[in-house]
Length: 465
Ligand code: AMP
Image 1 (tube, protein in one colour):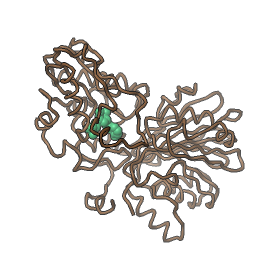
Image 2 (cartoon, rainbow, N blue to C red):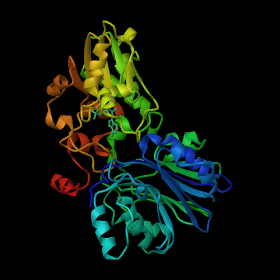
Image 3 (cartoon, rainbow, N blue to C red):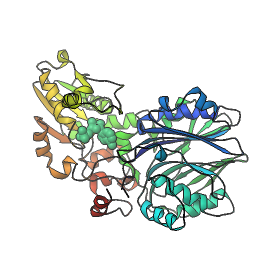
């Protein structure tokens, strides 16, 4: 059995809207969440009687034809975009996951990662359930499908008692849409209105895309059920001691136009850039972002410092994750497949290069080199988050501990390894100041090693690979 579920990043979407073409609206909702997963896409719908499902590998716009959307009738839908790495890149693992054989048919779109999925899978196998794929979502959906209860919310609440880890879910049954967030609120999930209908999505950007209005976030531990009688909320039965929303959503993962915990991410990232200047000023002529994710922070750094902002790296917007493996000659081109530089902007300049994170360090070194080749006199690396030192087991594809450059090298050593003239990372305090919320609202495990749930030991993860 492979340990593969930690390598997932996903976007989920759901809609309950009689009279609307819900499959098409879900398609556009997923389009807005494409950054959360590019490997497969899927939509499940219900016409009140039965469930329909279409999943396919690839980007949202290649996964569905007009004909596919026509074969997804009904007034309730859920959708999923998934990212995973080799080994699990097969269509049986694509979401949403559908189980027909339980108490009633149920389909689930899941963002996050259960740390006890292996145990759940073993229990299901022992019950004689034949599991088709290898994901935690499949196990989660089966548990849900087999859990009895007087109504859907009761069944979900009982099933939740068996889930450990991160899960934001959109759940579809013949008669209802449900939205669920784990008790720590690790992955985001929000609720919106579309006319008389309801929408749920990983991020608010997906609401805006389809013309829905943002209502509120689904609370940690909350279950929301929407059916012909309207919307009912079932808050977490006990008040959690803390919330543990993924801080990496704020740093990099979520789209800058999304809102989370009452904050617009573009604005929060600008403030990260301002804090970064205060903590790590540089004597320089120009502030350059690594596009696209570090643009807001570079703007903030420039505003706070008075050093002009300039775009000097142009990213090919269409490169994405491609199924075409580059050959050796192209691999040697490395980041040049993705970025070109503007010598007119860089010639003779002392450059502050702003990025959101250094993970393995494979991007930074060639980028620094590219800036120098195009005339930069000095390159000062500035990162708008603390060093990433610990792997994520709760839903972000973030490499193993051995691969993380900051787990092996000190900050100064990283600066030397990437060939920068100086380097500075934003502190955790600076990051939290920029967000404007206390530490106990966040999971900061990738930065601090403090996991909010017990995670598998390194030995277990390696053995399962
Ligand atoms: P690396 O080259 O491994 O150091 O990765 C760092 C670059 O990848 C940064 O420029 C980030 O913007 C981007 N990045 C950071 N985290 C992730 C992630 N989880 N998935 C994909 N890209 C990422």
